[in-house]
Image (tube, rainbow, N blue to C red):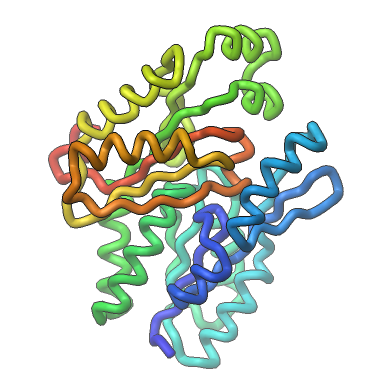
Length: 288
């Protein structure tokens, strides 16, 4: 048993099997199709989520975990004498971090619990979780781990492209007329997470132009070579794999990760979306 317990949430898109391998806990945000709750615990669930969106023509909603979800894990850690590191989805996107903080205040074990608003989501949140697991394996103590995570979270970036504008329309982010026009012209919005919130940084006409823009973005914001680069996809991996393979051709020495993006954030992206995440080099982070 580890002396540091690592907890994250399902916005990091870590499956139950992966959580067991990493020896971490994952608290679930709720995904609701009307009154029906959908739980994603496996890669098959990620795929099924997008199929349900198509079948029901119903835009899902999400809700934060309850403080009790975190409190149960804190109590287990207290009984085991473990310190607790909680890596939450960006507070700019969800109240998940508030639930984790409320649960902390409900215990007499507060000095052993650190709740971190990662300011990240999906792939970049997963990156920070993997980093925490690596630090624990290297023997970092609790305070050193907290310091390291807080330093790296400000240099983590995640950006991507949206393949189908209709999902932005369903989520109420753009009007129907604009979604129709965008689909007709094959417009691909490019988005990124800035200060914990999703923002658009451009749009391209057609997938080939969007792919070139994604690759150019990576080159324009050089990465820290001590960290891998993460590529992700929503439902269909073809587009994302093309981007990853094009990058690998130019940078065969770089360690890459490839994984699906689930419904917590993926509901706004729709099928065919692509995500990229990595840690900026020191100079890049100062100018970004």
